[in-house]
Image (cartoon, rainbow, N blue to C red; front, side):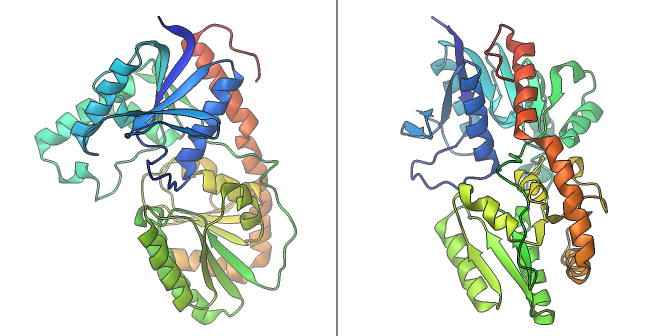
Length: 375
């Protein structure tokens, strides 16, 4: 028998069986969403690909068998989820690719941004017939659930231009930042610290930043680069550590999430040099909430957060363009200060409280009833 308060969340992979997490923005988003559902009186459970059940941060995580990570494996995961959660009355698909070929009743799909906008994505190497099938599946995933929650307007604009007529099943709920946890503090002004607070992947811009860092540290002995994040495996982190050790004033380390406010607060310039597959970046919002000058690419949902020249810098994400933007802010501390002050004001519009309010309204719209009026 269905439990009217039960919510099954299909998340692909959240907690690896090895327990080695990158704890990316998507991971943190899921933790906050799970907590919100509990605050509203629902009973959530996360289902993921894997062999073992887990409990993490008070969250129930249940394993589902699936094949490889390719399309057939995702289909198997989707079907196993559909069959194993018959006693759940509501469902959330944590990414569009998980919502095919079947979706449950009273379901919501979340888009964390366009994820196929780079040359290495399989879509770019498919035949015409394969592309048509891929797009057919994507259309089903975006439109078959009762509601699409998109973290950025870039995705919604793409859907509207590609498949018009589904606007009534879509809602924009941008990402969030806890503005009490992330806030400005006074810092030492004797040096300029440039922070890259992201995963160590080319799609997040790590390769270009390393090139630029090598150039800039040769010109300015008062500049430091801090790289704070994890790769997909330990070898990536070790390679990054060796690179940092070989370059003066370049530091690589990883800290738990609750120590990240201090990391942002000690920076002067924060880089969000995304190449592709970006929504409304939590890292960008956290930096802005700490009153930092941010330099971003104009990819995905970053243009929902940053207005060029007002609360940050938007530039093409090439080494030369990134270097020029950094050099400009290194040489003009007053500009850094103005951008950071405006960035803090912008971040307040993306508060955690507002995100919870928007999600609560979305849930009431689709699931009805009267969840606890927490927001």
